[in-house]
Figure 1 (tube, rainbow, N blue to C red):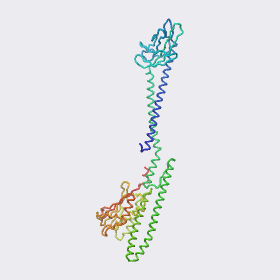
Figure 2: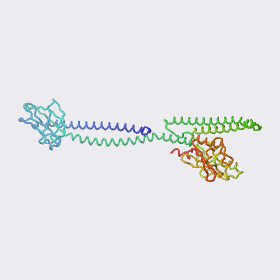
Figure 3: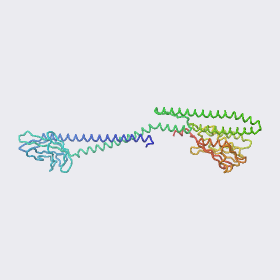
Figure 4: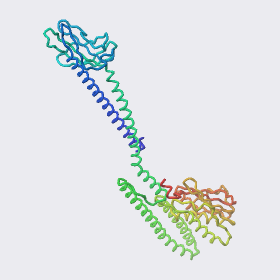
Length: 456
């Protein structure tokens, strides 16, 4: 959860919704319970008023006249009762009572004073009762003070409260589910631009686009603009670095060429030493130039070079270069589908060295194949030449190493290829070819085949 913005927002919203609905449910249930209790108490007071108006004191006895009462007062043990107690010097409980009490008596506490009194009682069956009691003094001279009480079973209150509570929590549950779905949908819509931004960043990283493309919300648009600005500055910086490296190489090669031409006109030991050192310096310049150019290209974004055009151009060039020996160059089917995530110039240099070396030692055929392996492009260059012993294959990539004339030549070119490949995060290896000669396998990072695949 800590690693997902979506789940953090969803969890926070769900906790808040749960707390809010719980408090709302508890409050509404309490309000309804108080409302029902007050209504019930009002009915008891109304019944008590009717009872007060219906009683009379005749010949030392209390008489209860006809009154508009609840039918439950006549049904035995219905939970709806009234009772009249005699107070004063000769107290008597249940001087008169409703038929619903049958042979039971309500045990009323002592009167607390004038006015109505709300009581909590129990009937003979142990059921909780809510009662309203009142002390009444009739106008007759010999009439004693009377205690009137009307009571009702609290279960009659609990039943509608429980029914309302069940309906309330069911409604709140449906509301909670609707809120959760609404929040989930809102988060999906709110975070959708971030998913789009991630896909566009992947497209830039894969080389499908040079900058972030598309329309984003106002909150994300400044970030996208700043990122595109950084990408543009990075591309400019890489181009300047490559241009400066090329200018430096040209500046160094010019005096080296002058020294080499001057030394070529002499046959002295000093001239021979100058020629050797000039050639060493040139190899160093070429090696470091290739390495710096590859490093700059790796740091760039939005690079994607289709391999079909460079391969076809190199094959045509090598066919003309080795035409005198009758060597045939072939490209296996499938090469048109590959895209190299790097600079075209570096791809030309790596493949050019490998195909040229294969052409030098091939008897009649050089075959180039390209396969996609996950996110990489693997180039396979086979020749039908004499090959190279397995014991010497590790040395062929060392800088400045030249194998014998009867073996496969390597020299600086293969070292440059290995350096460029490793700088891009790739690799190169040599093995025996099915054609009988040497197989060179170069694996490099591949770019997205179709820019649209980066947006899925």
